[in-house]
Picture 1: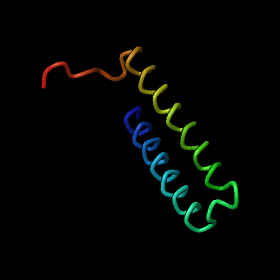
Picture 2 (picture 1 turned 30 degrees about the vertical axis):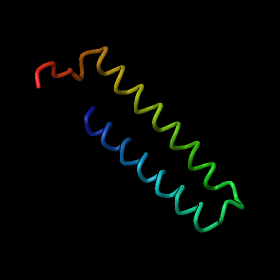
Picture 3 (picture 1 turned 120 degrees about the vertical axis):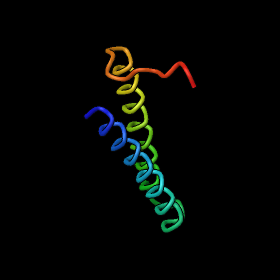
Length: 67
């Protein structure tokens, strides 16, 4: 369940990235849609980092020390 949440958040960050690019190209920077997309992408990235760190701290995810 936790890994699915992480993948969904990563996909949401990618969608926000490409929507920001689309808005920048289409609007030419005249509207705030690209800026809103950037703000959403930053918020999603912070949320993703927080989920990963909390799950590592609680033991839901483990690091692989051996390659």
